[in-house]
Image (cartoon, rainbow, N blue to C red):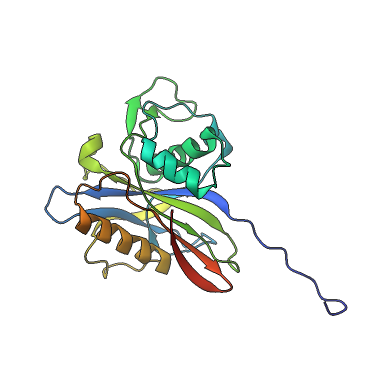
Length: 225
């Protein structure tokens, strides 16, 4: 290394999770998306799914319904069977917590203990759809796990959504026509994976292989978990 040069420290990706909440009440499947505030350092003014990083509190949160066994197995594979059960469950808990914080949607059983959430999250119906790690060079990097959930399966009214400081202009987007909004390239790729899964079986059965997007020597790689 040349004298006086400084070697930049690689940013380690942080665990994160997103929910693709799906509405199939009108025939064509729609997915809930919102625009990130322009104040965000990471992906400002772009439309994304509700979601965010896993917090330490998610590891200790209570729940009403546990992870589906096939989702648990895929997550174990993703972490090379080195992650404790609490970390795997915390990913899904983070996804539902963020859905509540960003869209005022509660998926679970009402709870009197409001120190964290006013409900106990039900993880049962979350399908594991994809995983993606932010490439090096971004000011933030995340190891994001994308889960899908049908609104009607969990009693969510598609009209009962509210914008937040985190996500503005919450809207339902036809998964087959995403031209109306601007989104990150990886989000478009994940939506493509969702479309493929829906075309294979519109019920999104559990147990399908999970695509994993990451970079190697500057190239985008797609593997399967």
